[in-house]
Amino acid sequence: MANRRIDLKIGFECNNMCKFCVQGSKRYEYAPKTRDELFRDMEEGRKESDEIVFTGGEPTIRKDLPQLVERAKSLGYKLIQIQTNGRMFSSKAFCETLIAAGANEFSPAIHGPSPEIHDSLTCAKGAFAQTVKGIINLKELGQRVIMNSVITKPNHTFLPATALLFV
Picture 1 (tube, rainbow, N blue to C red):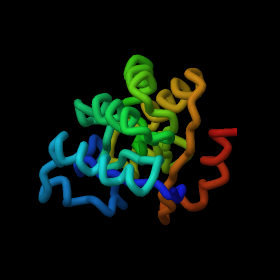
Picture 2: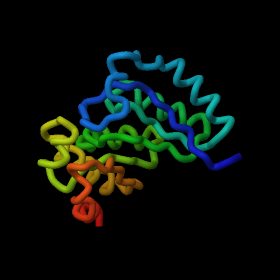
Picture 3: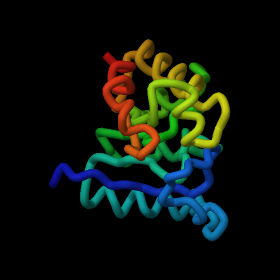
Picture 4: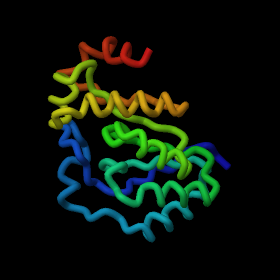
């Protein structure tokens, strides 16, 4: 079996309103997939890969994400990544719930080295603090964390400083 990953878009809703978001207006145009639809997608995807990425919109605001992760684990996915803005991981209990369900790789997005830059780009006051706290929680829980950042005109000169957050 090839080692490519299945990207499972579980909906377009998000708790940020990023200025650069390519999903943008889709949150208003498309309803989230049902749990049964996603279960079928996971079963089909498992024929092609044993790695899955839950993405969106923002997957962590979906109430049934732990059940979706549990299903992926039960189907035999070895790598289960959550691609996220990271804000919900500011709750250590939420981190623990997803880890217990089977998530084993996390890809939070940081778009600048400070609240001023990150929060301005995400249009969400407090997002930087929540995301950084989430990364700290995940690292304290021994998880693999992969930083993700969208490069834009307002943040491109701050890339080295942003990277230093994770050294």
